[in-house]
Each structure stands twice: as C-alpha cells, then as structure tokens.
Image 1 (cartoon, each protein chain N blue to C red):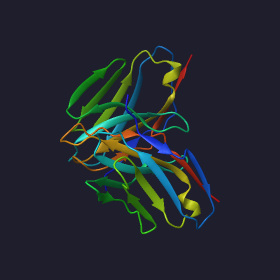
Image 2: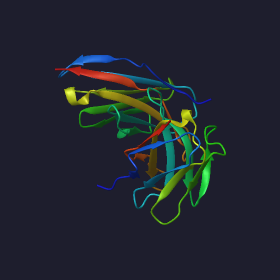
Image 3: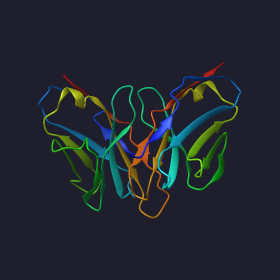
Image 4: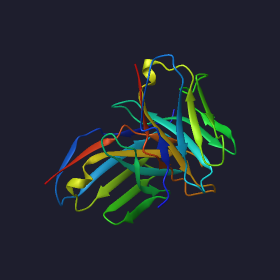
Length: 111
Length: 115
C-alpha cells in the first residue's frame, strides 16, 4: 500500500518567517512528488514538482527530496498571510499512475 | 493560461438518482483523472483515462461509476445510483502526454450533495 504521510498541523508562523512543511512516503520505488496548495472549499493548486534528490527552488518556495530517507519537504520563505492554506503532498509512484495524496498540513501565517 | 473547467459547480440530488459531472480538460492534455475529496478527508483517486479507455481505477470506482469522453473536449463521470456517502467534492485533473513532467492540473471541482 503506497502511503503519503503529513503532519496535519496546524502550523502557525509569523508573517515574514520561513514555514517548513514535511512529508514522508512509504514506497522506495517512487518517481515524483508534488506540493499542492488548497484553500478552503477550493481545488488543489500545483505549487511545485520535484523528481530528483536535492533542492528545487521557485520564487519563495523550495522543495527538497531525499529518496533514501523517503522524505519530501516544502519551505516557504517570507511567509505571507495569503499563504495560509492547506498544503497537500502527493506522490506519483510510477510514470502514469495516479497521485497519492497525504491528508495535508494546515498552515496559518499570522500578520 | 489554459485551465481545466468543471460543471456544475454544485449538484444536489436525491439518493438513488443518477448524476453526470462534466469536465473540459486542458486542450493538449491526453491523460485525464477523477479524484474525490470527502469533507475533511484526503483527496482520493477514482479513475484515470487515456486513449479513450480506463487505464487505472481504484476500489472506490465500482459498477456505479462510469467515465466517458463523448467528444474531443468533454470528459464525464457518471454515478448511476447515488448514495449518501457519495457526497464529496469531485475533481477532474489532466496532464500532458510524454515521459514527463507528470504534473496534473485540477479543475475547480463539483460539490455533490446527496440527500
């Protein structure tokens, strides 16, 4: 059973701080990982994808993947109140297979 | 920017009735997916569709569910006889063909309420 696990939070950070969101997965044979942002009542919005070990940066967001430790993280620098949302970690465990989602971590950025 | 669209945004139905949820994937995408999210729970995969046939389905996707691509743009999910537990947000997603990237883009969802 392929699983993606996340701490449900809530994670509260002050405005301007770095928010760190973490995710672990159960299957060593995995292809790619994604971070989605989901506002309440809305659909998942893709923020980052990462396929290789290491870091990938896009603006204020950095995704980190460590396949040996089966660990994915998302760092949000200079957090803004508009970043307050639930962040979903998802894995695609082979090329065309569907995404397996974690339960999501609720982030609250306090102004 | 191209996006996935879904209709209706909200569907209310009586238990036992049939519903059809509609999606228009991004135009050059060839892989299509339906996911659902029960309130407060994780997003769950239902079915994937490629080259006019189902490529994978989950345990949730039983005989009450079916998918169709009736024309070159629409992708539909039909629930034949709805149950109370089918109440959820239903999301359509699509991605482009090829070995990568595997990024899936989600539509805004249809909120299905079964009474």
